Amino acid sequence: MKKFLYIPMVLGISILFVACGAKAPVNASKPSTTTPTITKPITNTKIIYTQKLTYLPSYNGIQPTEYTAASKTSALATSKYTIKNTTDVKVFEDYENILKKDGWTITEAKKYNIIFAKKDKHIANVIIQKSSKDIILQVTSK
Image (cartoon, rainbow, N blue to C red; front, side, top):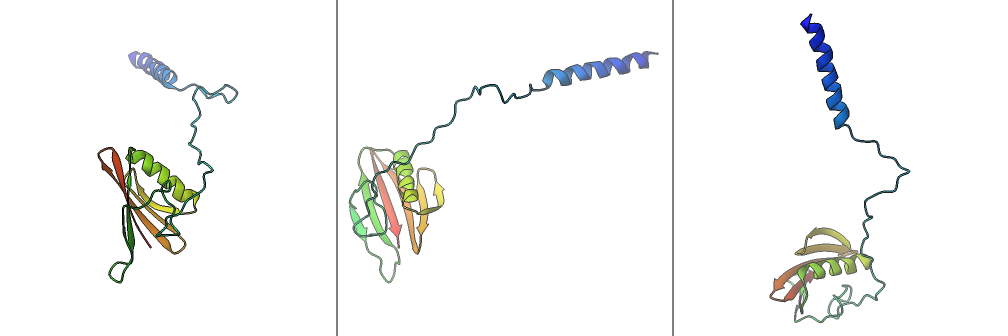
């Protein structure tokens, strides 16, 4: 007789646990309580190209502090830039957006350090390094 009492009691308790743990259905007619994510728009600024590598967009028109042309031993040209009073995060995001806007395909990116990109027959490897309050931007490209 006790078995007949235990079975409905266990079933009843199980149903209560399942019912209390269930999520309320989402009603599409209710307004959402989450705020939408706003992405940072790419501005309509004119893209400025580097003087030495005429196919490569410049970062805000800055000039290189060092430049090494491609040679027989190295197929890639190297440019180094010093960007004053900024952060690696800003330079990374801005330069990635500039490259995308110019039609470059980002093949790989390691947040705030490296961007690998290609466009047509050209490639660009961008290394971003912190140096006190400044950023050193090293670009190797062909």
